Image 1 (cartoon, rainbow, N blue to C red):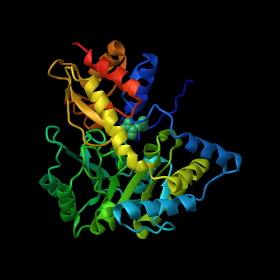
Image 2 (image 1 turned 60 degrees about the horizontal axis):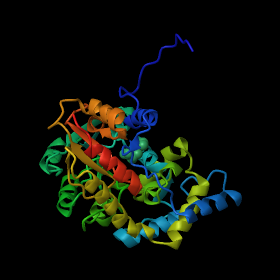
Image 3 (image 1 turned 90 degrees about the vertical axis):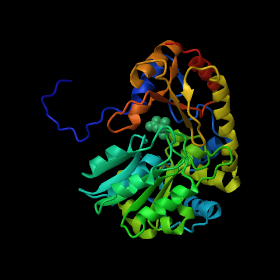
Length: 385
Ligand code: GLN
């Protein structure tokens, strides 16, 4: 359709890399190692519960903050795992996936002119959401050789305008995890400031090799200034259901809910009923670490002969691989080449940098069934320049 209508772009970024690669991967019938979404079924009992909920009439808007039984169970889970007591009525909100929790939190808490410190490579939505508030994103690059945050650099980046610091542990896309020494530094750099910590912990259960997840809610001094974002989609292998949640002290959550109510009003009702039943009936999330560690290792052994330099990964769904010892391509071209010639989809790491930094690396996802991991690992191992 022709239109002479002129619009001014609010965001300079293009279409999400997930949409771009998703379309190309479909065209090339490529093995999906690009997206952090399982390609296997969730528990049959979860599907049965959701179907039952629909048949029983849970097809209209859920309560704005989430179904009370689910919020109660989520508060109990956090108390058990991390020792923090959140009031389910005022301090727990069920959201339409983690992204909605980020959007509602940043929109509610960050004002024009504020600065938001976060770490790159970063999940791609943080920066544009900050920009949409008329605020300034302040990215700090994580060194890719050590994957350790330089906290002196963080301290130097904090100004009186810093309103928020975004943390992501376990980390997408590097597979790194914050350790206790990082938490101590985080407490120190935010002490006596007005900074809210927005903590993306959607991979909280995917932690390998005996590592520990340090939730902000474990540390009272951080919990009082933090919004912690969790995912039910990731924990129950149902990312398409779009159900996540966030927790925060009542004063902060009151502001987040003001945005959430006008963004989606409420998260999908039958899915919330089903997820409440799953949470009530089992502690299956404790098995996720072993389940995904095995998947990581299957992919790693499939790639043992690969020319790619695979970075160690101790958490989450992803690992990084360096290719530029063997190729001068840009990371995007390298990913397109893998799609076309090897029929395997991955993500160029430059998509996780606001300035498009190309470090000669790709992100590979291992939250897939074992046959896909073996086939994908073989395809990556067979790549030749
Ligand atoms: N969080 C997931 C990832 O990083 C999925 C994101 C998406 O597909 N929009 O792959």
